[in-house]
Image 1 (cartoon, rainbow, N blue to C red):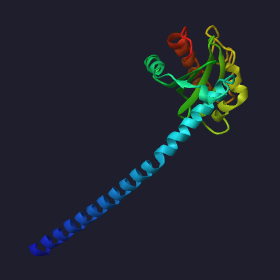
Image 2: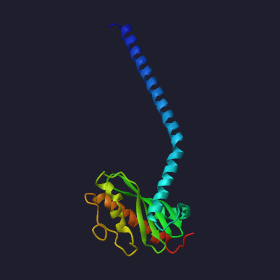
Image 3: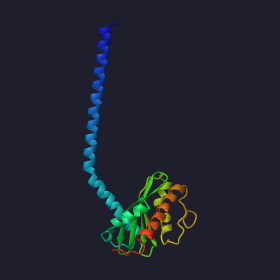
Image 4: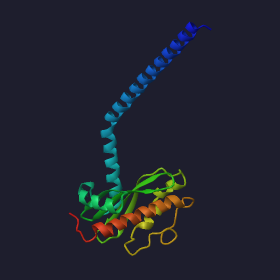
Length: 199
């Protein structure tokens, strides 16, 4: 092979590499534009769905609540609560009590939940907003018989597995995640909300 042929081969390889890089850049740019447009097109719908899930969880965890319209988001309490427990997402007040939305660590990821606490500091309900636990095992944390165990517990109650709370069979880590979330919600109520009457 002559020096001239070597030079032509190198130019040919460089040309192919540049062509390939350009094509990859175009495909990547097109994909980024499509993803951006999809985000813009769906973000409002996703936010609306998330808000509806949070309102439903609030209604489920505070059964005495007559309407979701009675819920008022308490941004100042949220800031204080998040300093105490960073997993707190939202705090709602109502005439019948408070709902604390927060996340806790489960086996398969974050367990988002709502904990309803009446004005006297007694848990009225717990609802699971979302979870990614193992189907048929950890996902059973959503079952009413498990969640009902938390109802009626107050600041003097021991919210601990195998104490007053029985874990879901085969899902100790998931059950612990829910119990930990409820403990965090009670801590927020006791330290941040207690003594303040709802607006």
